[in-house]
Length: 251
Image 1 (cartoon, rainbow, N blue to C red):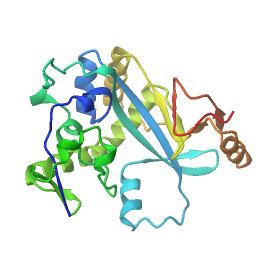
Image 2 (tube, rainbow, N blue to C red):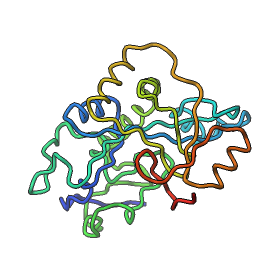
Image 3 (cartoon, rainbow, N blue to C red):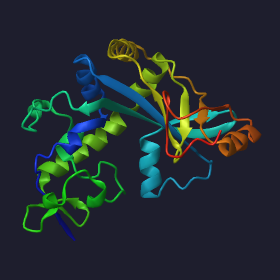
Image 4 (spheres, rainbow, N blue to C red):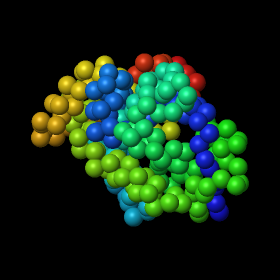
């Protein structure tokens, strides 16, 4: 199966940003005075989890082991460039003013950055004419059609693994030890750029292990009650600052 694509410079993907970044990319973004959030979601992780399955192996490689009460969890930490409205690098003619130094997530768009997830054109911001059948092949049988794009995608995914220990120490430096239950949303830590950079510098200098105990935030009373029954520390919150929900509030 082939998916064809060519950028139309519509600029839609360059508005209201939530871009997944590596640590180095996050440092550059915050260094320019732009917002970087640290997002967290967690999975309960039973002792008998089949870690040989490819999806489970990837999830383990991209998460840190913690305890939520007496329940073992794996926490995914994600650095995200957040910007409302047009990207600060977007030029009036819809070209990128940071093209040579743009993050890898921008370089691979509209490909899917997560393994085991299909790229669905209808879920991308690009207009229908960007997918015309006479355009260059973007993806073939679920894989990038060019070796250059495949290499960038692989580097993006590898950074997700390589950066994990530093992101764990960064979370500790920011006193961030709350996660959303996977599938329900994302807990968010939203420091100002200067505070983010200071915490990152601290994380890079320290060799101490980050906290092993985390708690869960949710906007669903049923989830709160379920976790409370397991003696897991859990906090009921409304969607907004500090919590991005996949569901309407059920408080």
